Length: 241
Length: 309
Image 1 (cartoon, one colour):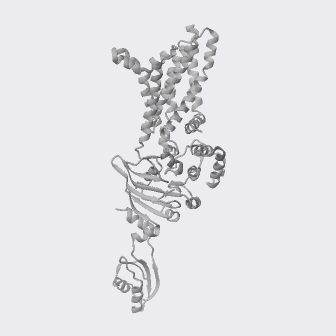
Image 2: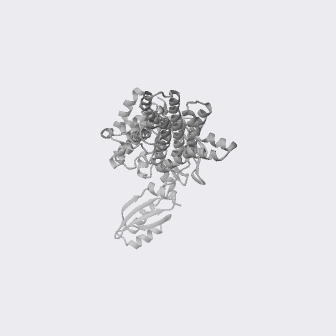
Image 3: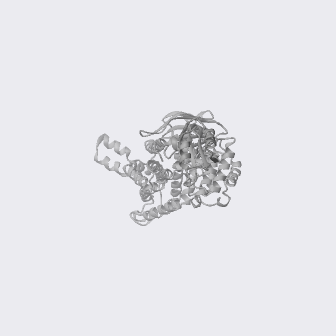
């Protein structure tokens, strides 16, 4: 059995044993369910067989829930000293990080899978754009992967879980919102760069059902950057604890 | 597998936690690591286990360097870190299985190994409990079990008996002795009696440097080659005896150690013996020599002498 998968399995089990997984899944379903069907601009008001409102809500819900899942990943190991125990076992820093990354990604994928009934319900109400819906899900997964990676980096910096949570949100908000807003105020090259950095513009182009290598490269870069940053941080270990 | 530590230096900021330390441990040897708190014991162990990379120097275990083949070294080592960190939310059996899988023990053998560890470490009654529910002594046993589960060639134990009761300490010492016959063991402790009872060789480290290396009797000799005698002389005036003793050749110090009787502690100058001369003055003065006992230097004294400055 691969070392990465052994780590992933343990993390997943820990999520479910601590009830954190159930809380996040239920909270996500309630939150998105409310906004898809009842409050704001629900499907029945818009009178369009589309999951756009669901994707809009999920975009924000995952932004907040993911740091809650990633905050303990390294910070807890650091504060309890288990980081030393695990890193003296036959595995390297990267395997540990990728294992943890995959555990959260699988949990998010499972959560999103549980919203498939929304898709079938809406498809039965009217003609739905299947391509856009599938790409919407792909977009959510890619975005989640990027935020998990950022969360893992934030968690590797500190041994305090609250600091880790807030730091992940702080870094995330730039990609989520700030770059997008700023890009509107800067014309020309700077505006284009800011627009490219903004996660929302790439996410929107995916939910429109268009798959572009530019967007894929963007998400993959964020994922790799976050993991690489976390690896740099934990490989330094120049502390006495 | 032999451990060869060559000139390692580890800095935290500008402070050198370990300062060009070199030593080696052979297969079948149990090395005791002694030193005051903050001397660099744990840091040295962390570099051997590939957790910390030294700023300078190299460590080779069974011929593999920590810089080139950390994965080979990690496979060969069983390590119990200082504070015994464990995943508190896991049951004992799940935890041991997780560690066994990481060590790539064959699937068919995993269950057998786990049960053997449970038996050796006396965890039979606690194996289904969560680690957080265990007492400190049982947690320590789980820590030992995880270090031993893959039958490692090298065992690094950072204060293995902390938190155990006297019975458990004896059991663990016996276990370490038994394992130490075919394997290479390094253990640290600040209980001197424990190191003396368990280890073949002792290394004393202070402020990141090795200050002594040898068997416990070597260390005692090296630190003090004076003779210390406890002497009781009867049928004489205390002050007269005291003066007579002080006048013996090669006497460094005479102490009256009893309030009423005539018991003295006499220290010789380095490299000399006093027993004959004491006997002679007793005969000359018609005193009765009722006790003459050599006092051995304790390891505590050696330790204090080497690490207090």
